[in-house]
Length: 114
Length: 116
Image 1 (cartoon, each protein chain N blue to C red):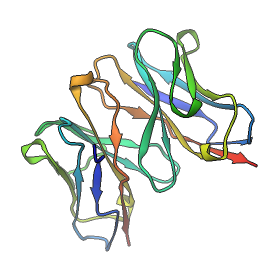
Image 2 (cartoon, rainbow over the protein chains, first blue to last red):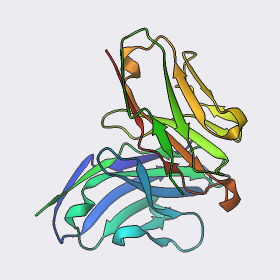
Image 3 (cartoon, rainbow over the protein chains, first blue to last red):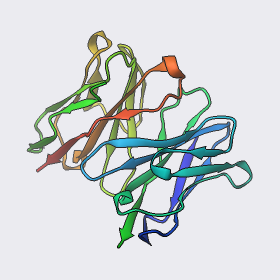
Image 4 (cartoon, rainbow over the protein chains, first blue to last red):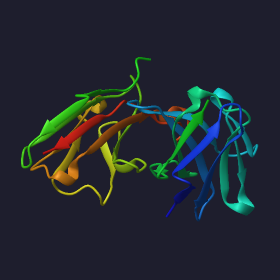
């Protein structure tokens, strides 16, 4: 069975500082990995996804994530935080068939301090 | 693309009552998913459809929960004899397998259920 663990339920950064949100996965088969963002009172939006190929994936709003098989990690980064990045971020995993519904982590709430 | 639409946005009900939620997916999306999200948790999978066929149900889905997707378009999720533990945000998402079985899910804004 697949699962993801997000380290840190709450991360706080200063505006302009590096954002690093951690995600480790557990999967017995090659995983497909996703990051979603949820703003208050809204549904989840896709930030980026890793399927196969290039291990560094670029997403929307300046976010990127790197798939590291040796570390079973898929951490999300952004070089410079903006106030509008404050939201809840979810890592999710599926298998290569796509017939297994996405399994989400518990989420990390990002606060950006002016 | 008008997005995934969920109704109602909020529902307050008394314990023991039945409730029904509706989800209208993005037009032509053949897959439709229901998730449940409680405070401080990520979305938990409940069930999903491909067209009108319900392909998988989570063990979380007790026999008080039933979902349908007649004609492969909109879907309804009914909870019978609601309990306080059913209080949560119910999320609907859709996708289309023509872009791959792992095509991203498009989520609605959810229906928040409060059982008093």
